[in-house]
Image (cartoon, rainbow, N blue to C red; front, top):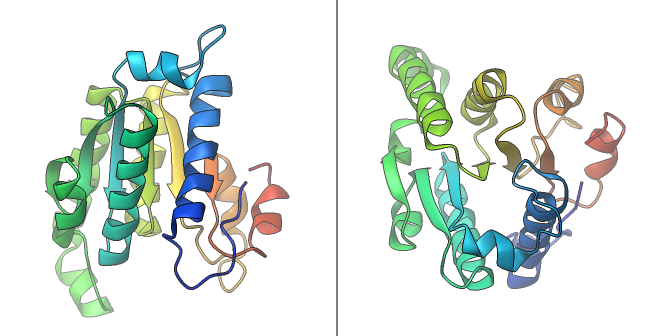
Length: 204
């Protein structure tokens, strides 16, 4: 599981490049999109669809920069759909709904919007399975993202590669979460350099 370094600016070009390399390596070598002799050029020829989910403003920024990098690497042939904000929309994502619908800031807001959030989780998982993307890339917002990812894994098996960008802080709280995450994710991209061992010990 790659780490992105310790800088306070996780979206710097070098770090996006690290994430991009890990994602494309997985898709061309060991992911469900793998074909004998598959290369990045082969992947580009298939006009790959990436389904992205970003539930916060910071995730929208990371998602937009990752989309830009994917388009550059794949000769502009990458397609995107999912959940995000204005930056991701500017990079060409086809929004299922805006990320503001799943943003929440406190327990009162969460309780008030539980029915809507549960509905959006179901709708998003259904959309991913129906779209059959090369990969589902979730960015931050683990409470929403992981519920979607688990539903997708249950319904699609290993046909859709599941990738999460920005590892949850299991080292600070809910340490048992790393084991649970390893059961359904294919790739986890960490921001902080000391995070990988917490997940590598569980097989990620």
